[in-house]
Image 1 (spheres, rainbow, N blue to C red):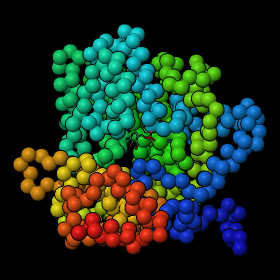
Image 2 (cartoon, protein in one colour):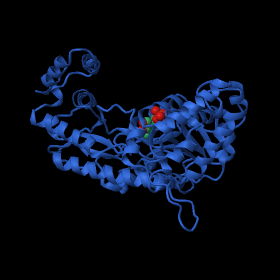
Image 3 (cartoon, rainbow, N blue to C red):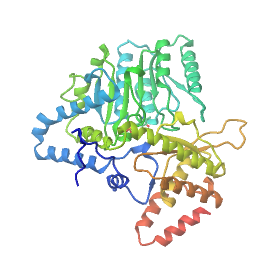
Length: 464
Ligand SMILES: Cc1ncc(COP(=O)(O)O)c(C=O)c1O
């Protein structure tokens, strides 16, 4: 039945999406898994998958027409939407790339050339957080260290109580870095670190870098769009990237790279060189050879999807944040632990301390526990190992990074709580868990085979 027309003739406000419609949108998710790890790979609702398939078919139907008439205007539409969402000044400042890893390569390659062109000298430095994402750290090594640059890592404490701890450590590292006359040419700063997950006060750190004469500032905000508000003008960095496939419902993979309008913009290039080389980064990025561009074209449909929720993307972010903090508090209370940061430093992800008796003593232990939770309890959640500080009594050495996205229900977190409670009750700790190599595959094979009983007894065997 059609919605009744308002008497004043205004367009009726569509009803917000219902819980059952949300379930239908994510019915392709494995129903056996409590998926509380949106942070790693995001999610894509079925209406957007359908839109993506339309683009793919459109290309296959008449590729030449798609290439000559459709692709560029469609990517431009995506760039225009992003420009508005992040408060950029010009659409030329926005390029669409595959992912944050590619965006980092673009920015870091540009810095390498400054070393080669003698604009920068050997020994000039780049500064980044110790908690920078592993692939981005390796890019810094590959592009900056190899070009003769020096890398300064800012160590941050964890758990954290306030932004000021981050600001103090960053200032200390900047000043120590400059103490012997070294020039700091580039800062790579996360907006939301991945592991442990913390919102970083980027605006303050950017200002500090400007005050200290750091030439270029790149914000790795892989987790930001759809998770926290973004205003690139207010943040004031030169470069800012965010994945669209993590928290903005796009399929893998798509990201934007914002490059502030400047003379340097014309010197930025995509590492994959195509016919578009020299036509500006946005154009170079819009054609990196024949491939599937469909994930980059569904941003209008992503906008339509989020508009079905009360308050649109802002409403989604607000509720995800509130819910993840509520769930983190519930888990911490059940396990007698604490959150890794205060709520205002959590986005739609939160770090929850895990019971010390689980004996998480290394990164390998954290991975073993994660695998065990997946295979034996159907819980997908990343675990962070935090080395104890000297003199700490009974420290929390393991934190779970929980996420909340629109498809999550409270049962997902209850399942996680009960799984950990059972491990604790059964006296299981990480030394009793098998090495990950082959373990997950073996159990998954058993689950698919006609030997479920054997699988169950294997799980219980490692439980005791
Ligand atoms: C902070 C951060 N930077 C960069 C990346 C890389 O993202 P992608 O693998 O999509 O390139 C991630 C991925 O999780 C991340 O968390």
